Image (cartoon, rainbow, N blue to C red; front, side, top):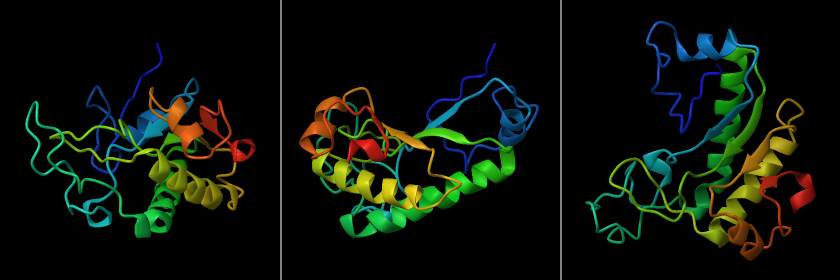
Length: 171
C-alpha cells in the first residue's frame, strides 16, 4: 500500500513513518507516489508575531493572536523559500512535486505550528509563489492547492472561480 505522508515538516523530519530509513530515501525508493505537500507555518522570522505558532492560544481561545500571519512584505521571500525547498526535495528524492499547499488551515490559530492566511493575503501570496514557480522550468508543472475550505477564498481573492488547484489558467 502507498505510504501516506500528510502535513509534512520535511526540514525537521529525518525518519520515515517506520523509523528505519530517511524520509527522502523512502520517497525516492517508491514508484507509486504523487507527492502533495502543505505548509503548517512559514518560518517564524517571516511572521508578524515572530513565532511558529499562535503565541497565546490555548484550547478554546484561538482568536487571541491577531499577529500570527505571514508578513505581506515577505511574500516574495516565502515564494523563494518554497522554491528552494521544492528543489531540494526533488534533488534528494528524484521525484517531482505534484502539488503544494501554501498554508494548512489558513483560517485557524492553533497552539501548535500554524499561521493565518485569509483570502486577500492568500490570493496575493499564491500569485507571487505561482509566478516564481512558473518562471522556473523545473517547477512550472507544480500545482497549488488550498485547504478544504478554499473555494470561496479563491473567488474572493480575485482568482478564477472554481480553481481548486492553481495553475496559470487560474489567474
